[in-house]
Amino acid sequence: MVENVKPIASTWCPGCGDFGTLASVKKAALELGIPNHELVLVGGIGCSGGIHNFLDMNGLHALHGRLLAQAVGVKLANPKLTVIAAGGDGDGYAIGMGHFMHAFKKNASILYLVMNNETYGLTKGQASPTSQLGFEGNVENPFDAMLTALSIPVPNYLARTFSGDPKHMTQVLVEALQFNRENKGFAFVEDLSPCVTYNDTFKEWRAKVQDLAKLPGYDPTDRAKTFQMCLDTIAQGKIPIGVMHRPKEASAEAAALELKLLPDRIGPAAVDIDLGSNRAAYEKLLRAVA
Image (tube, rainbow, N blue to C red; front, side):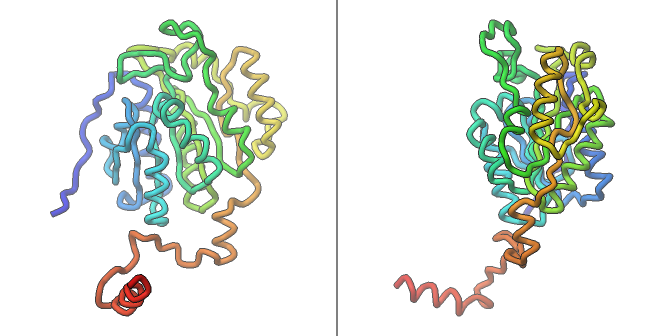
């Protein structure tokens, strides 16, 4: 018997930035009218990775650093599903870096939502790949995921949000999920989500975030221009947020569907494997390998 597991109460610390992310995911799914049974959230390891436990939808707890591989697998198995991979900066930009880099190139129509708090919150506040110089003795410059994403010439949807502005985050997630649902490719959204226990940056980030859409010359279809705007914003001591890339060109997936190269898009999860209706095909296969 399959039991319908209901959401549990959040185990996050009061005031955690991830609550803003949780609320925005709910609102975005509701605004798009996505049925619960068609929505899958693959969670990573860490505080943020438990987000699927607090939502009434299909959820999967992935291996550490492997949530993108498993999320792509879910999407390939049943392309009709709307798939979100959600994890933290430690999970995604450290042990998960290999999958992170290749996800842009693969360009599968899933949403990767990273809650970046610049620390390993679950394991008590060690420096993560995005931690600032001096944090807990960190001597390395922080990794900037958005600059990396912008440097990969693939038609992905790219954006950064801040948990202190859930209204803006909801708008971005609605657009990102719609991008996925139209088979346009991979959407990457990094949410600045402070850890109030080990690295409370709410006040600092609220003063520093700069929505690029409010700056003159903003053009999210121009990858090189946005990259330079990010560099200029960082040089001014600000943190660039907003939609960084909204591609004009079609993804390989969208082009294949338009050309009817992928006409059924059923996926192995929905394929009829009943013995009676497939006996002839099975017998042919067995004869071929005998």
